[in-house]
Length: 127
Image (cartoon, rainbow, N blue to C red; front, side):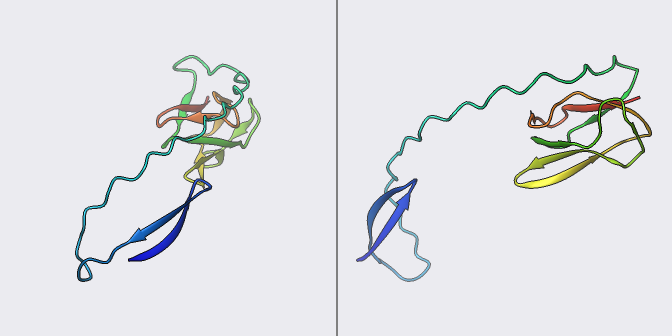
C-alpha cells in the first residue's frame, strides 16, 4: 500500500493505493465521492446593445466562428472599416481570436464588450 494526500476544491483527502499487478494492468476503481460545488455567483446583466443592427439587406453580417466572450470592439459604431481589418476580439478557451471585416463599409455592432456569444451569432453588420 502506498499513501497519498490529495486536495480537491480545497478539501484534503488521505488516499491509499495498492499495487496489485504488473505495470500496465488495469484495475477497476471505486467510484469517487460526489462533491457538491458551491452555488455559482450570477454575473451582472450585460448593458443593452449600443444600436440595433440594420435591417436585412442593408448590411453584410459578420458572425462568430465559435462560442466565446466579446473581449473588445475595435471601432466605434458608425466608423468606416476596410476589408480584413480586425473589428472584434473574441476570447475562447483563454485565447484571443480576431474577427475581421468581410468588406469595406460602415460598421454597426450588434453586441457589447463582455457579452457571451454562440457560434453563428451576428457580431456586427457592415454596410
